[in-house]
Amino acid sequence: MAKGLTKRQAEILEFVIESIRDYGRPPTIAEIGEEFGIASTNGVNDHLVALEKKGYITRSSKARGIHVTEKAAVGLYRSEVATLPLVGRIAAGQPILAEENIEGHVAVSASQAKPAAYCLRVSGDSMIEDGILDGDVIIVDQSLTPMPGDIVVALVTDEATVKRYYPHKRMVELRPANARMDSMLVRPEEVQFQGVVVGLHRTLR
Image 1 (cartoon, rainbow, N blue to C red):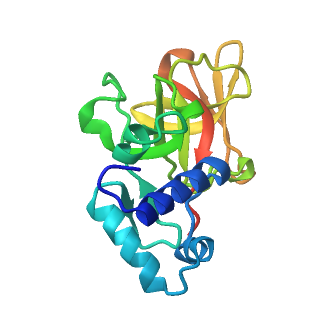
Image 2 (cartoon, rainbow, N blue to C red):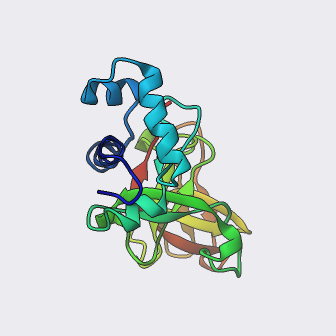
């Protein structure tokens, strides 16, 4: 049993982790209640408050706003769930994983937690036709070399952008997945690749 947790709290924590691992999203309060036969919303909330106070989860006001902390993911369920740093900004000449760039951590499947991987929150709708929406969190692997057609995080004139990569003879095309937007055409020396997008972590509202 996880240190400092009651049997029921440990069971609920494991259920949250399994939901993230298997379905890519945390459960709602109603789903937790149904799983454990807790009829009262307040009853479920009491357990979640306890888990939050003990440092195993954080919560937002969203319906699926439960987030597993590094303490839970790494300390308790290392073989199944791990955490990746959530990067707030990417700037030229600065290591992506510099401490000042990290806003928090995101629990992901251990198989996605590569040593050079990080998470980045998407802003805008340039990739909506690839299923990447405004506010989504993408998983990015810095160790991969971009191949034609890959979705990449690229730094152009000190601005990070998420696009599909298509190299041409003298130019690099960064193509959006949105028919209303045009591709960016830049010289190779004007773009710095910050990794290839390998996954998507979405919290449903």
